[in-house]
Length: 86
Image (cartoon, rainbow, N blue to C red; front, top):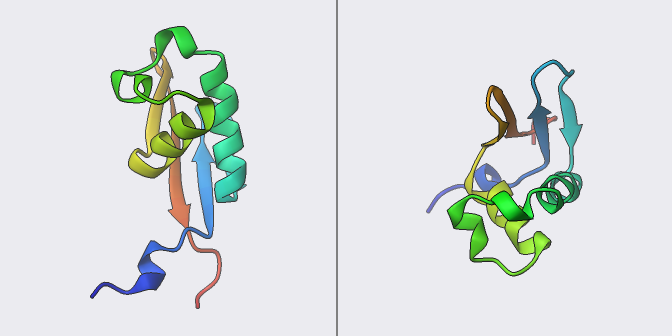
């Protein structure tokens, strides 16, 4: 059985071209992705179109991907990080 600690999401580091890295909690990243998705409802990737609300879309994106193309040449990336050793 895998170690449960491996699946704990303490924090995410979020990378956007031309900006400093930002550390976010899972809830903060969810809010951030929801805000970005709210402006792109007419141009959603196919896998997100099946979800009926922003929260479900953002949760799916956060939990199944680690990057999202915002526009050509600009990709948002996020990675789970653990800030202290258990």
